[in-house]
Image (cartoon, rainbow over the protein chains, first blue to last red):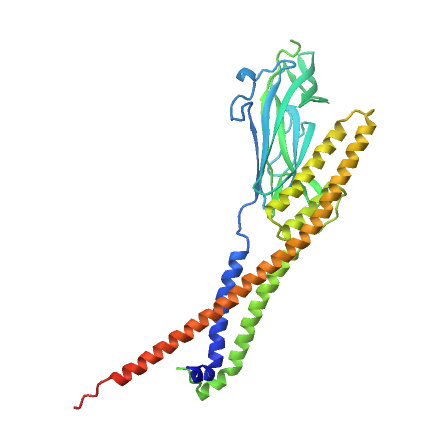
Length: 209
Length: 171
């Protein structure tokens, strides 16, 4: 066999290189990460961490000092570590919601924001227990003046509703973008910008009782 | 089967060129892989948390395991909690605030040190893993070539035996 091989060394090298290209291509293909869609999920659950019981006795008409229990969560499928922020805003029916096309935030009043570093495929869930601790009625408008969220008190400005109907919490998801070195609404996927937000409505028709 | 015919010599130059192309293609695979792994996110960094985020991203892109990254994130989220606690303190609690700020600084310093160590370790580990992977590809190609030669040899031997076994029938 050996004389034959020596005489066809170039052919042997050719065979070896052909196999080499095939095997290295396979090795490279298995090592590169698979293409997938990168996104974040934002959700709000009720008191029992279910998609029900968002309000005490399932009545969205909230009284002064009545505690509402929600759970807000974010799940990351972004492929890398993210610094995310949840912004909790309070507004009424005329407040501008986030613009999904232009990726513009809501015009509602920013009450508080919560930050978290989040790994890929990880979920960050936090309790959001809130109550309105101060409100007043002026000329048929109910004004929310103070909120208590998880043992912290926050002053609220310019949030009112006619007869206390149709207040809403708007919860926006923001991420820190390393390229622009700033906090941005939503996240970038390729050339697109996507946002995630949730709103929950409530009334406060009897604020002083 | 393995004889080099004279007219094949004329094909040597294009063949050599093809071999060089193949070798370059394999080398470019190595190079592309190396560039992809060692590239780091760029940009102006804000101090503290965003700087820490950049470090963690570097550790992640260097090929650190999810457990290693999770440990860093645990520390960072702890620092975030302390930061939130400090910002919610009333103004007169200056001592407690100073204590929290010192704790945040220490946590971020630990993150920075650990992230740098992890980045170096993960880069080395990742490089070794890739070298092993591509070396196994070369080994597999060598074994496949041996199998090919053996198969060709057995085929040739079989044909020779069949030739000698042929019966010559007189007409």
